[in-house]
Image 1: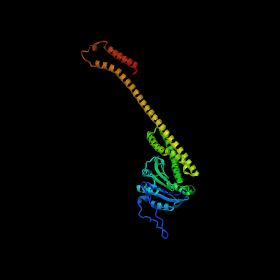
Image 2: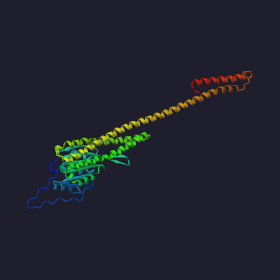
Image 3: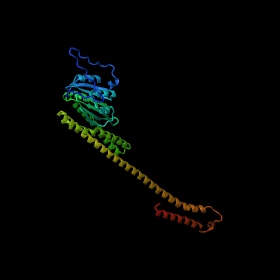
Length: 382
């Protein structure tokens, strides 16, 4: 466990001075009384706080003030403070006690930060994007975690439901040999939990992609929207995983400089391998979704072309039928016209008293009908 070191006073927040040592013969001053009217917001934000020594929990303070006091009384201990959506006053209190950099504190106050790792003196500030797969809506839910790692403290600030840090704490408390390696071991456990949480998401997304492929070739009209939504989730997933590769390689580059334990180095390398594998899978998912969207667009276009072709063929057949009907109507119209004229029975129609009038009228109707039939036949109307 690294020795608790004195910290320089910050230009913005200053740590409260320690009480003066008692003179010979005097009683030591009584420890500050625990306040009973604690702020309800602080109680709700502090998920869990504990002090550890040699990998074993020695106390579980119920407030930040009590945690600060007990850590001062145990210079060889390590504080692990877990917060969920803390208030500004709580973060300022932590900044004053542990001399956190103002820029890191400002980032921790607001969510929607990109994953990153920054070092401010002896303190590491890490931003992680956790993810979990929701089975019912078939969606990926993202959370954000900010971690401050100092010589004798670890502070986690969680924005969102993921990850479950209580499981990380139980795991570390069940392996005191790993926990006694100090704050860096806790950081490893948190990184490992976040990265392990990606595995169910990868499996869920793979299943979604398989279902989408079936829907695409099945002609489901709603599949385009699902492809688009899953593609957006993969963009967020890629933003969460890709920076982790560089972050872990940065940690590994400082192993020699900061004297990281060899066993812990192996653990961190294993996490880096898992992150690289996950990042490659996410890249493959994005490429697969792009190709599926292209195939879906092609299939939709082909289906539309087939429908247009069917409509065109139906229109052509309808035109052919109209041609036939029009042709026969014209052929039948000619004898009807002749018969109608001679059926008027006017007194001064010379053809009525002509001996060849009737044969002439019949011959005229036949000639007109045959002529029209030949014309329409040559023009493929019949």
